[in-house]
Length: 80
Image (spheres, rainbow, N blue to C red):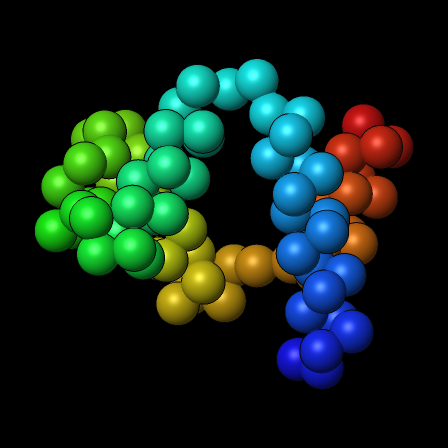
């Protein structure tokens, strides 16, 4: 990823985080931040069982090729 792409992604993530109202997502992001700073031993142990199930389900979907491009996802979502 180029520097300009990285900076764009960072700005998009900051905007997204600022708009979040879901406590569970904010908690997950906080755990990831603490883990990356070395203040948390293992973020996996700090997330809920439901979050673990969702992550493992996503990994399984990826491994089985059950993915789609983000543009396809947003298109389907907007066309409902």
